[in-house]
Image (cartoon, rainbow, N blue to C red; front, side, top):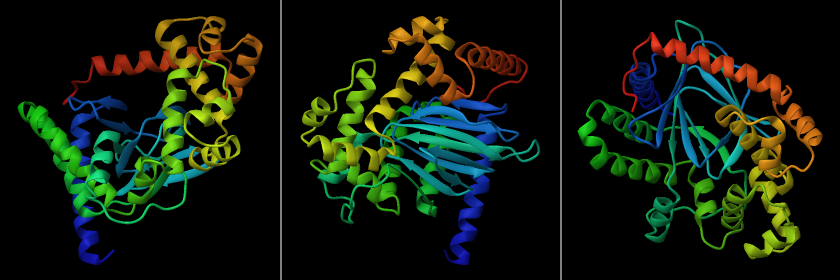
Length: 318
């Protein structure tokens, strides 16, 4: 990147950091009046947090974070963009942050319908490559950062959000497709491509993870042989179909226990486990603590965050 281009990116990065600070005045991940946009602030490095990301574009304005998929670590520094092109179970941690210089970042959901429209119109050039991981990091150029800044700035004029946010999100999608991240997004959205078929299978799994997983049935559903399906699934997600299903089950069980107050055995049954002891073992491996201890720690942290919010006014929250 040229010196002049780097100067522009640095200036944009500083502007974006100011905007995020205004939206997230306490340490947390915050939704906004633009449903597809969330912002985050953390004043210290964090532990690994297990989450399932939907297709999205993430950008760091200040600090740094790491995203871990199946043992592979992707580091996201200021003015770099992270693309997640299918639903993925990830571990995320903030690695650079301090009180005077907190981590500041954002995520924007990618609409697959808009991606498909661009591909149908042939608005983005460059060929589809071989199947690859559905996650990648690349520098964010000035045009992409500029569009993101304009999307965040809309929050200061709520009357404009409904009319203009979809247009700016569409521009952001175009910038991604036409930039260094475009190949990853194209191969997931190109009808008939192996990665597109895997994306279809993942969407099915998200809605049926509590059911018994039959590789033969699922591979036929997306028009692939069982061996090709297994190979491409692992290539795209870094996980086998069974490992992927297990992560979805554990994440949903965690949500049920934390959000709906279910006991571990009931949550395990609801997400498809027949053995509570097996659920407990797999939960401990995934989250580092038993269900009871993990939920107790999460509840304490949530209460602390809510108390902090009650004494600290928020700006730009929906």
